[in-house]
Image 1 (cartoon, helix red, strand yellow):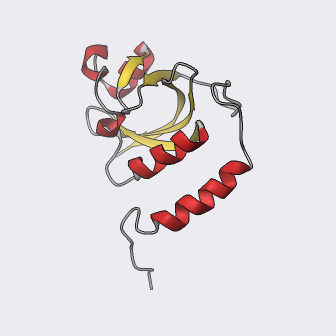
Image 2 (tube, rainbow, N blue to C red; image 1 turned 90 degrees about the vertical axis):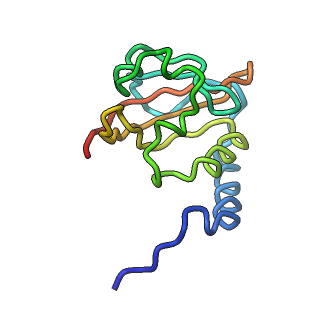
Length: 138
C-alpha cells in the first residue's frame, strides 16, 4: 500500500522550523565563498526576484537557449514543474545566505537535467550559483 500523496508545501511550517534549526548548525558569514565539494561546469547570477542577470555560455548550451533568451527570466521557468517548492526553498536560502543540493532543470527540448548546485548570496545582494551536471533523461 502506498502512502497518500501530499501537496508540495503542505507541511511547510514544520519543514521550515526543522530546516531553520539545521541551518543554525551550518552558519557561515554572508558573502563568503562556497565550501561544498563541487566541480562547477555552469555558472549563473540571479537577483532577489530569482531572475537571471548573468549566465555562462556553458549554461546556455546546457539548457539549449541563447543568452538573451535567459537574461531577465526567472529560474522557475527552467525548473521541471513539481520537483521543487521554489518559494519555500528560496525563503530558506535567503535566511541562510547559502544552499547546496540537487535541482532538476528542463532543457528546451523537454529533457530533464539533474544538476548538483551550490549558491550563495554575494555582498552586493546578487546570488551566485554554480552547477555540475549529474545526468539527463526524459
